[in-house]
Length: 461
Image (tube, rainbow, N blue to C red; front, side, top):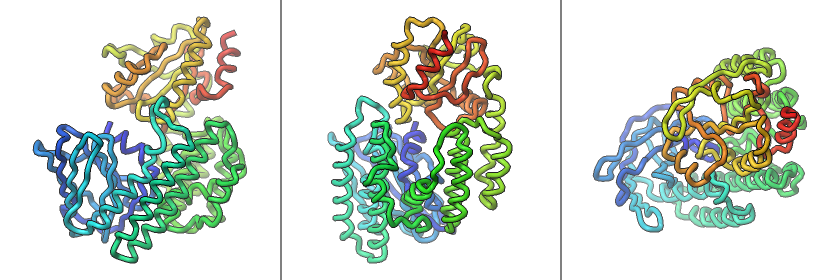
């Protein structure tokens, strides 16, 4: 559960590091009034917002804990997750920061002592201000209007800018001023994208979006750390992202070759390139050919392509018409059942999700509508399979939502096998199995996509 909460914040973990390791006791903490709370941490050794190190912290019975992450020369900003609350610390090689946290009815109070107190207070504010989860929710019922999030972002940005003056070192103050502006710009772009998704419009046609993209230096270190490099590079691709995504990905390769000179940005974009094809494309094209080309394109960053070789093998095995892989599922009351035994000669629409996944939960109301729409159709059935590690969180979500269709969960071991079998690298994921137990689509359209209902109607005539 802790790892999942941290992973939700990966895109905004814009953190700093250098290559020489340190093993000093960098952080001493104490939590008052929060027994049994979980503590985890997240940071990026390279500054890449998609390449992070995460871990757990053991909290003693008296509330004390220490943290000794391997960091680089100079300094490293680290996100600390205490329960559901995010904090930030600024760690410096060879120095110790003391962090005192007190749980109150309104949340947590925090106090820093020791070295670089000014930077620790600022980094804590900066990380909290641009926490993605502040401007979204994994529970659709708790989502706020986009305009409310925009207003909150403006307020958080102003408070963060006002706090810049407390940083004593001018070079650090200048650095964080640039980083704060970049994070603010990216978060505004993110909210524009969210609104366009909800409104079913093209965010690239939004005037403010185009204005925010102006002047972004793709190869600048701050742009790299704040995810602006990703946005600005992808914006230059004109091919539509659809189907296998091959045309989109091949044009992206060309854009990267023409525009990207920073090795760190290029490595980041190779990662994005693989995700665009294998996670967001339907792999209906020539997978082996693409894999060969992207591995050659990646060059010294070909290690990023290696994990996708298993995915490519899985995609080959899960093409339409193949027999659906079987897996053991657990019921709410802890009993085990085979997926194969649930098919019952019906078209089966499978929702692969988790309680911590915002996009997954946003699809639930749409899935509910599908279930209601086809409740009299005995040729179709709906199944949700959770990848949650925390069974209690899953059960609590089901108790609250009371879904009217079958719900199952995977054990951690079966989760890996299931994802390997189907080539799943991200959720939500939707699967359709036909009445013969054969794969109709290993990467089906989402419940929110009107094509889903049309497909069900066509396949259940």
